[in-house]
Length: 491
Image: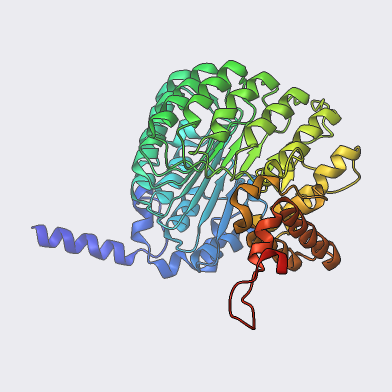
């Protein structure tokens, strides 16, 4: 009996060339030979335009790498855009996406309101194993997150997930937290969502248990409590995979920043930090970052973004103070032309002193030689005033030099025309060869040779003038006649 049932079912399936009415919708895609459903004639029947037809055929032949569904988006500028309308079968689109092995990026801007069409599309999408980047917009996450469980659980290629324009309540946040734990995501972008406080904590704790290194939390109404939670996890080392943190556009004030900075002090992996779009942070609040910027753990930070905030002379002084001992930060991004920027020549002087402290040779040597950009337009265009021009010249020196040794040498020779040798006299003449060697090395830095030669003669003269007897003894030689050392009076 079993044999005949199986045989009859097999014959029915083999005899079907196109889906027929009496076959249930959910098994259509399993009953048609692939060479038939991949044909141009059938694809034309399930699409409303030549453009959509070409996209389907591209999916069939594994020629589509990036696809956007439901309207263009700024994330989808380089994608093929499938504009769904009457006559497009989204169930078949999902099927072909599930079969496609070349698709690495999918942007879902919109889906039809028809529940059956939506579910059939998601059923097909669940079978895809090639998508590496998935973007979902316009409050779709709340409707489809549970339906995509199989996709997130079985697609080991997925590394980037971006969700935007959602109201994420606690239940949806728990679903997202579960997704984060089940996948091998490296980037999570939650820009412009309304995260509830309890939901935010669930998501952040899930990130601490994942491989995520790039976290965007911009425009999410995160305030002091959220900063406290994030700061606690950063301070405990649970987020030590994190290399990029985007906190733009949140209502962060000085107190919130203090909670966040307390955890940043113990983080050793962060390479990019953005606090742009938080105008409630004042110069006093920026002082909370000084321990972090000067700590030994701040060895990876390369980029700091501070656009759209109120930066004045006090803020510039706080940043300059924090960066005085920092050896890693290369770019400090803000726009000096913005209305929020109230920095005067005093603020630029703080940055000039940070880059080249001319109070002594030693302080010049210990100045910051790492920064390559301060302010968006600082390195180009017309200068605001003389101090701004000096900062720009120093940053250009940093950018063009081949090493920090070259930068330090250039700054010392340009800022100190007469080198003070007195601090080296305690080592007597032992230090003189090192001074001469250091000046000789400067010849390779495109300085004018007579200038370097004059410094060499000046250094030797100062040593001899300070220690004439030692210099004379150093020139004592044996007498050619008797072989004895000549007396000082005989020299």
